[in-house]
Image (cartoon, rainbow, N blue to C red; front, side):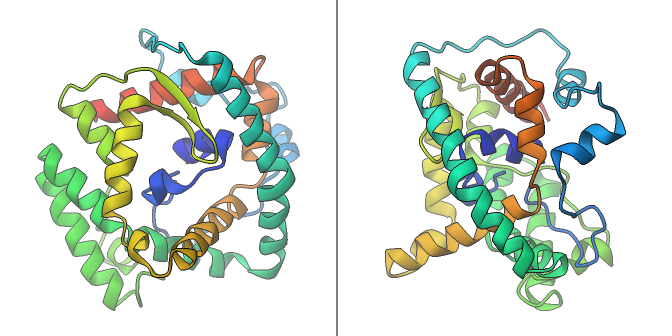
Length: 265
């Protein structure tokens, strides 16, 4: 959820569709947490609550400073991605939300999460997370068969097989001591760092969607996933953005802290 919201600052495409992206964790078709969220409903619970409090509470340790020598260009990219979200992605996701009921959208989310198992499997393997590596294989085999190509998640719901966090190659590089490098905001891909950008290339290679032919099919599949994920979290990005005094700085800090914390897990 956290990374997905951060990447919405630049229109997420799940960590090269690994998930990253964005929170693509698989859930049951009856997942009650997936509803059409809006900024107003979030503030209705506590109008004085800053949505960035959850990041600050988790990452309350010493702030991590990452150089941003391209801040001028990054801010332009941030604004472009922000406009693309409000002018293109959000309207499309809202239309899709009206057409596809929650069980359908949750099933699509589960399908893509299952499909991108190779990204998480290889990342866990390289990080030496033996338990998670085994769980990823078991989940893939169970959900691909019993779960009907991953549309359902019996591995979690029936057998309790759940991997707590998404894994990606940018995180793997961090585990091996590779520093963040400079901060970057990519058009369409959103916030990143030099290290995570290299990781995204590896994630792209490991993602089965990459090899769909022709390339228009691969692009279309990614577009479906982005739209589906966005439809499950409509309103969340708006709430985070409106609560931040300076959105660019807030999203940059939250992204860096989140990625640093991911490496420590």
